[in-house]
Each structure stands twice: as structure tokens, then as C-alpha cells.
Length: 268
Image (tube, rainbow, N blue to C red):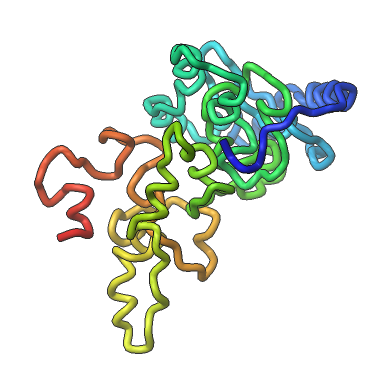
């Protein structure tokens, strides 16, 4: 579990008030949205006034829980389809079938504050809504309600640590991935490129953002892309979080020794 402990909301009245406020803001599809061509006839969306809502009310989750229809799929159908083939799409069922499901596990198997830059108790950890089960888009990207109503960017972080991104859940004795990564050479932040440009030639394999773009040809946006902070080779450099046909959602296969091997992309 993250160091940001999963804590219950003490004021049950506040919880009910927030949930009621969210429900009132689920409005029918408007003519303006239809004219824009972005939403389908079954779409529900939030009103513009979401700034005062808290917790689970900031997340959209599933619009159809039985069929795992993501609210985000209205505008991002290809990403939603590839996500369906990932382990994240079955995170809740896997937990329940594990034989050792506990409440302390639920935040990492649902949409909550864990995994994104949301820094307060939110999502399933705020109120146990079935529509927030599984690790959905908002688990990494954050508050979909904000994006839906005012097009604020909800970018997932590429950086990794025990307080942000993948490391908030993929850590600890259960699966200590972030601890193992931080002790490896991949977890080292590279040196700034020197004046002679020697460092710059090394960045496609030694700096996360450059490796993602130049070595793997990935142009997906992420939280730190517009900054000048150098990143180590983080989880999202080698793993494709939106889904991949390869083992463990890797960007390239590892089952063969061909030139298309994931590791050979840099270690050649």
C-alpha cells in the first residue's frame, strides 16, 4: 500500500451530501454535445461546476458496469478497447478470486487516489461504488470529470515513486517492483547533456522521455513531457500501459533473440 494511507471518511453526512451532489450533475445528453459529435446517445456527463465536488464524485468510472463500458470510451474508443485486454481490466475480479481479498487491497484494484497525482482520499477509497471497480483510465490519469467538462489535461505521470504513478500500487512485499527498479541501473537519473553533445547522443537509452519517443517511437503525452526534467527509465518506457500483445504489456517481445527484442533496443 502507499504511504498515503487509505483512510475512511469520518463524516458520513458529508459523504452522502457529496454523492447526492454528484448524482444531480449526471445530466442527459445536450444538443450542444451532439452537435460537437464527441458524445454518444447514452453518454452521461457532469455539469461545469465540479470544482466543489470531492472524492468519488470527481471520477466517472463505468457508465455500464456489467459490460465494463468506460465513460472515457466515448471519446477514446481505441484506448478503451486495448485496455480491455490488460490485467488492469480484471483487477477487481482477480482480487476477489485470490482467496485473500482484504479491504486494504481494494484501493489498488479500483479507481482511487492511488496511481495518479490525486493527493486526497478519493474514488473507491472514498465511497465503495461498483462503477469504480477495476483499474480504469482514471486510476492513472486522474479526475475524468474535470477533463470531460472543461478539457483540462488529465495526463498520467511517467515518473515513478512510492508516492506517485505506478509505484503507488506496484510496491511492497506483495509485488516490490518499484523497490527492485529503484535499486537497478534503470532507476538512475542520467546526467544532463554536456556542451559537446556527447550526453545527448546517449539520451535515447538513458533518459526516459527520449527513450520513449526515439527508441520506441511512442508519442503519447504524459505529465512531465513539456518540462525539462530528465527521467530515468521508468515503468512506462518499457511497458505500454494502454495494452500490448506482448507479455506483461511490454512494448516489444522478449521471447526471442531477434533484433526486435525489447532489451536489444538499447542493449545491443
